[in-house]
Figure 1 (cartoon, rainbow, N blue to C red):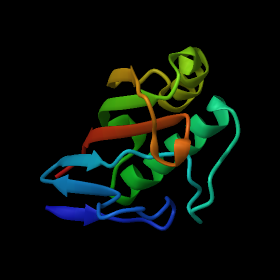
Figure 2: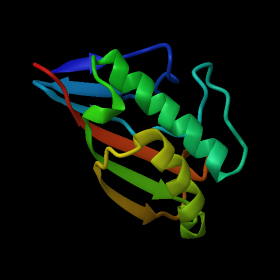
Figure 3: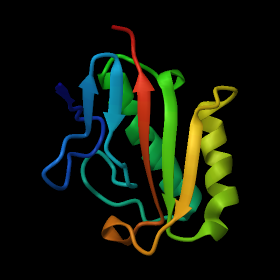
Figure 4: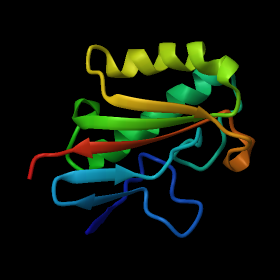
Length: 125
């Protein structure tokens, strides 16, 4: 088991790793719209989703992959009414690559953000 860390994504705000690699599998922690310097993106759902996906991209790249290596994501939304706007930004990042995905509405997210996303990727050995 190897912990993955990059300065191109926000540091963990608790006792966890940005990601953990086990063999060729990478499991990211949920990413919220924090900039790498730790400041919060407080814009609309599109702006928040963009920052979350930038964080995920940076973490996957630090582990030696790209977003094309992502096989599964889980999206947590504060409000399912934000689904269409989140989905539009999500599609811009993944393009024709279509990882499996679950999307759920939750009562509350860390720092009261609107979106959190985690990912599982398969990397080269």
